[in-house]
Length: 143
Image (cartoon, rainbow, N blue to C red; front, side, top):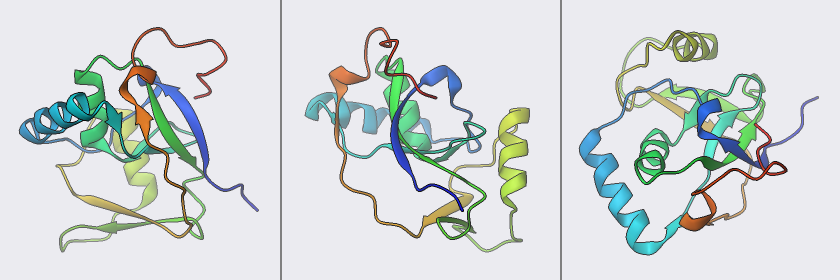
């Protein structure tokens, strides 16, 4: 039996992307986050590998704004009762192992290739932009 998702702070250096992102969308999102001062939703991360499962544009926008750490929901990716993998567009099925492999190899899929679906309810957890900037406190970086 696995544990459910947990809210954590991760250093940006620990996060591995598995999808490319659209630069224009990242710049627009960064402007919105800067203006509001809030990142509405934490990223979704595989707790074991550090692979970013959902939030590639948010991650890139936060990095563009100078984030040194990011708010995440950490999942046990292999637990299909909690998180499953689909595609945004028609095409052959993609295995979770392929997502992890491509992230580790630095060969991301095109934007919006994979669609991760969670089967649990996550509480709202907006994060102030000021919380992601600056040095990472020693007790805050769990990832």
